[in-house]
Image (cartoon, rainbow, N blue to C red; front, side, top):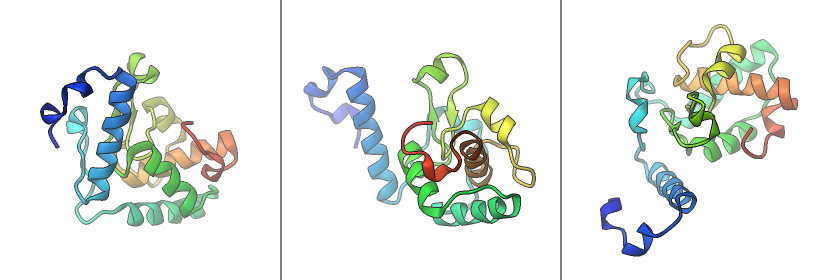
Length: 155
């Protein structure tokens, strides 16, 4: 669906409503099988061919178990779908972090300083790498909330 084809009513919506509608459309596109790319994420290394949310979560869980980081498939999946709709190249260029110059990136919408601090050895240094992003975010959530399973909103 092209935004130019939207009714005139859409043009009068507030920025927040437009963003919410855009996020719904992006989520629907991902669920339909197409990956919605973030324009600013073009410098990122794209997810590896054949990758899937299911595989990325399971690979992260293997690393997490080896490193003693708590978390479950369901907790990761719930947060990942809320944060990025499964798009490993997602980037948030409009929230307070973005306004400070540190936008949230990747599947679990991690900012660069958090990724660097909670990066888990043995995973990629690339914040857009799905396994590295999930594992670092879960490591952060474990330190801050006890587990990614305890996170039920933006964190």
